[in-house]
Length: 249
Image (cartoon, rainbow, N blue to C red; front, side, top):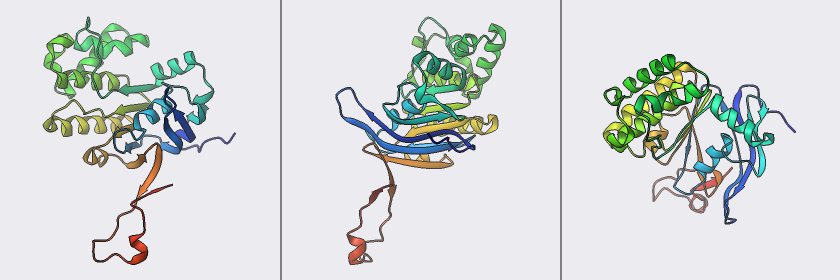
């Protein structure tokens, strides 16, 4: 078993995954993510982006292939070890906001910190700081049902950042936001990640969102692909005309 490169905080080799109905979701995907890098995983819906993030983060066990975090094999871990890894080292943002309805906004944001053993006072301070950064500080004492969907998503993003995770997995994090809100939230997320040295793996089908990343990996039908830009119509040679627009790599 080959160890991953030392400068890769995340490393995956030949990942294969099938849905419960037997349909393939990932077909031999390999990649490395450097420390403090913001990596965008792009592709249309159904291309395998979410499945890749779930495998890299240990949310689902890898069926075939390898996943390493800081040179530790995630693919050999049991369920409890993977759960501790996600709690202590990883953050996650879903495309749809999911909050505890009985807790207000700052309590939802502080919850992962308190589960790690942080005192309530320190957790509250960190939670309020991130809610302010994401322009939702005025709603800190509101319950989820008192917030609109875009505000709830800001709380979820604050919750993920408040723990200062080693790796933040963001699956279409701005999907519920209005277009006017997306750029501000994404700037806050990427600026926070860079200032705190957080590695980010960001799944998106939006080219504008992917453009904020340091590097982009593209998926199509569960495979990594490289987009080939063809010359304008009329300048295409016969050989170039036979070239495909996307090639598996």
